[in-house]
Length: 250
Length: 327
Image 1 (spheres, chains in turn orange, green):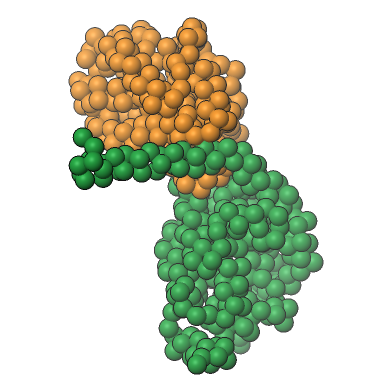
Image 2: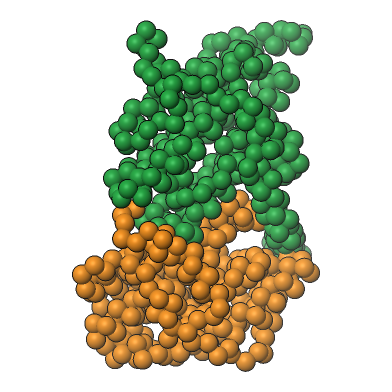
């Protein structure tokens, strides 16, 4: 049970970390200073959540395990984030759509985690709920701006929706870890808000004058550690210092 | 009636009396231009300065350091914002200033044309580059132009936090393994001379200093500020156990200052002229952000125009309703 809980914490933390990493790649390269600051802010919030989850996971693990060994010293197959969040910063439309699809998911997951029987998880969720709401407001606004902005922005963001939406199915897959967490009352039944999620997504797409693509869900299994080809390169950067200079204090 | 000469005399009297000049006050054209140049150059330095440090965000060695660096680079974007706003009060737009940066008409601090090659460079930048910047900026909190002086007060607070953070990175490295200490020493060796160059040319080669002093844009000369920086930094390096990369550094009892060796002014001018190790890459990165962001900025403008048009329409309907013209 302790192992499953640790894995669950990694799953939650890895999602925040991989998305935070993608956003941090943009720092200094955004389309305006204001968006640069906002995206960096979101990255900072996500990394704050990463620390909370990984510190807890480290306490549950054996000696010598720290938030940093969890963040930086695992093998690729043991990172449990969804494949959606590994998708690269193709352009600003991809950044916004990826963010929006995740924020909307978090807007269901976070309140559910606040009711977790695990007090620590409930507290971390309670702390991040305000951030989640802000992130969703930011990404929703940009969905509308780009969707209803110019012809060019509309076609770019529609293309990003078409590409990224099929990855969202994975968010709702109940892996063995999540089933165990559901049994313990630690995590929610993800299927229970799947329908509402897509209703909300569609609402925003409509407001943004965009259409819902009919593409079939992608077969991806990031939550069991099977990632896209992007993941190795992300880890290459993320782990660089810890691999090149093992066991040092920074 | 006031003629220009009277206005100029009164303007100088206000500055001499320590009064702040505000955007709507009369000012000599040269004062305005000098400020636009200096404030925009400062803003550009914040923005271009995000690039060398941003280079290490994705590779920061721990979660704590990553958060610290992200927050720091974000602060720089914030400083850029207030400085652009301060310059805008003088009648230039942010887009115009950006174009001046991209075409090379406006400069930025040359230090950012050096590469960040190791994690220790992030420490060295915080310690030395922010340290040198603070010396300049503390002086600027008392500069005569109000919006610039006020922006500086806020910026200085954050910069001194960055400087401590940078020094703390160096301290951690110096208390670490021999490999880490070597990384710290190498970063000091590479950053030291460019940091000294941040104060600008020698006084005798700095033609603008006299006018800048009269207008209280500057309160100390380049060489005075540089000396102050050396005097502060040498003991800090000693505390870290690092060796200064200048064999001529020696305490001079008589002067009450450290003596130091000659700066390679040829290198300085080469980097200023655009031939430094990263000048082209820095501008190319800003150009790419600008070009890639064009459709996003266009969309935001088009959207807000549509939105205010809709609001006008709905306000019009509301007005008609309240006047009883429509139901």
